[in-house]
Figure 1 (cartoon, one colour):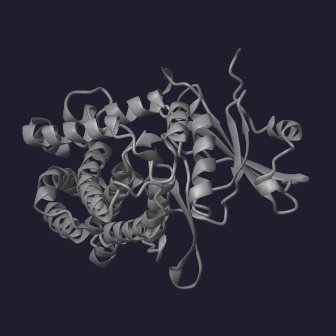
Figure 2: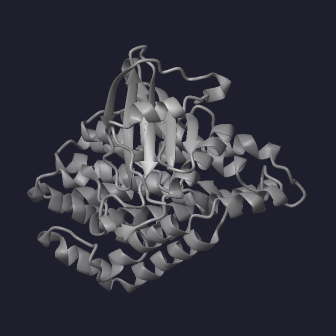
Figure 3: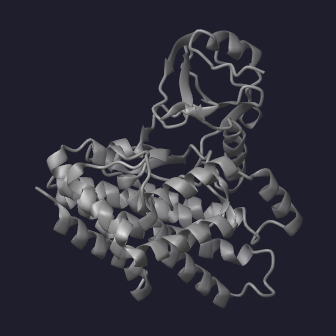
Length: 409
């Protein structure tokens, strides 16, 4: 069957045929449509916001049969839409209010209808604009903890876990992560790119055999530790935030979970830490040191919220016979150290590999050079430094020293 790409012109009729949207059992009645806007600026999908005269709205997201960033020459199964819809619904059960509502999933055209978050902003965009939101980093730590506990063996029986893992297999997108995050930045690849001024920095990464051994460990953990139904691509660009007075966060929503699979809990934490560091590198590059230090407080905020929530949930674990409190201490220590490792891999990938971040790419080349160099050097040093102590404040202290030392003001 020919794949039919959704268009603005088709959406009104499409919605008539999918009129059974029902968040929490209440029918979503859009009524007369006022506007339809195509807003997709991501790497993979089409995204539309549909707004009605009544003020109601819905987002339609269609996964394409290829990687949008590259085009049809990089084919990819649109089955990732099913993964995202299923994952978002499961995460909504364990972490309510921290993911958008899913109203409908069309399995024939791979279209998800979900909550309109137009009253939120993308966290990365806010950070790029110099805004600091109080509480969102802690919300994301809580989200990861609730998912880590609620979708793992600590709260799900063995048979259900086996079925969920089977249903959540995501080989195409896991393969992208394996290549773009853990492999291609460390050698020659047509998808790698960077400023000419950063060529020596990329070469240093490729020649660092100790670093590559650490990244090999990260890749092995990613591919073999099926601990929980993780988001899989959790960064500041996949979090929507609504704030109130004093920039206090009123609502945080993690979205775009199409990379979800049963993987290591620390991967999502490391991805967040990496993007906090990238935001800090941007601020340092612009001479906004106070803002940069606020960004570097975020790893601690996320980790401490994660740890506190996981500890709160721990007494509810289904099997207390062997999973003791002493085991919990070992597990948290392991996850904390792994978080450094995954943060390093995600930082290096965002500078050398495909699909970079606007934090760095929108800087003028003369200051981008130092910001990129700092991120690469931090990735190199953090993989090794984590064994001497993995507390988040040590990570932030290291990040501050490396990023300031590398900037080119």
